[in-house]
Length: 109
Length: 114
Image (cartoon, rainbow over all chains, first blue to last red; front, side, top):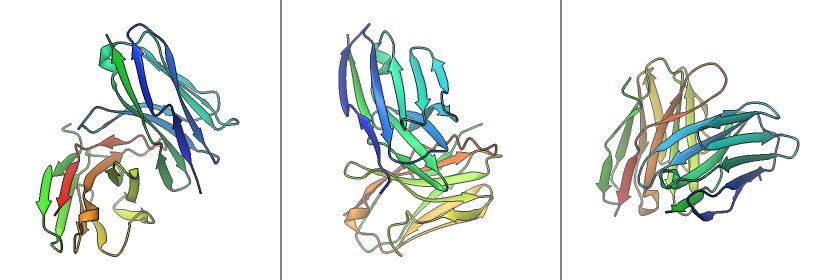
């Protein structure tokens, strides 16, 4: 059974600190996505990673993909309160799309 | 563009009733996805369409669920009869052609079956 595992599931961090969220998956992947979801809201696309070694950055967030290790990371630099949300990685393989369990991030002032 | 539009935003119904959820994708997008989100199971892909044709419906939980896309600007997800375990947030998402399958999500429909 295909698995998309994120860790940590919950993350509380202080403003200004750096941290990394990990997304491990158990099969070869065509594409890897990162989404953000605010409480009670919909999902917002952050990054689309299409190839091994892909790195994308937007503001304080940077995502990378290592297809050989079946690992994607979402790195947060100098966190601010506005980044508090749940972050999902998602995997596309063949005709299927699988979402990770999500990482609930709380940035403390 | 207005983004993906879903209706209703909230639906409360009694067990056994038919429920129809509606979605209007972003104009020009060729892919449409239906997801269900619950605390227990997270986000699950139910079905998706390409150019109005169902591509994969392996995530549809059972025969009580059905989805249609009669044209490029409209899709429905129907549950008949509904059960309390169907209570969830149902998201519709659309994606343009091009191969990246980057998805743009609608606001969701929160369904409560009592």
